[in-house]
Amino acid sequence: MKKSLALSGQESQSSRLFKVNAYLEKNFPDFFAEARFQVGDDDYFLYSRFGQYLARSIEHRRTPAAKIYRGFTVLNKMAALSRKDPQVRRMLVSGPLEYLVDAPKARALAMKRLSPVAQGYMESLCEEVSEADRLGQSPEGFIERTSQALVLFFSSRRPAGPTAARSDIAPRQ
Image (tube, rainbow, N blue to C red; front, top):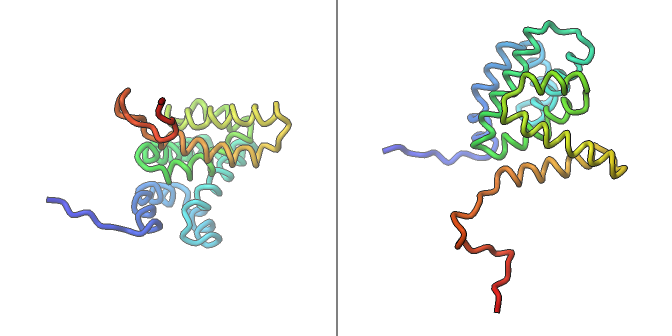
């Protein structure tokens, strides 16, 4: 019989991302050390900065292709975890993927190298950016609102069947 441990939000999040953090530290030791020094143990800011670093590296062509591909491996590992964990999904969508969407070369390469799950998140963000441009809104605020909506959409559960009760529909009289 397995015993489940009740961990606090930050502790459980760190344990969920342990393998991804280890991979990031192994393949990007300078970035990892500098980011941990600047942001501490906050994984949200760590991965947000990683997305920024990856997008800048692609746009300015100052990193070897093999290292960039390892960066996409980090994001693919996060995407695999995000299928089970809405907090990791939120971190991925509102962090690194936003930076990749904003950089044209990075977006094009990401669409080739990301897993289907991460590509789906990214395509949704791309649609939201084009919608913000069409409406004349600032993309940053629009992306923040829509990334929260995406997290809610992908984390919501569908009703079990056609007879499942929905609280937002009033019964007919």
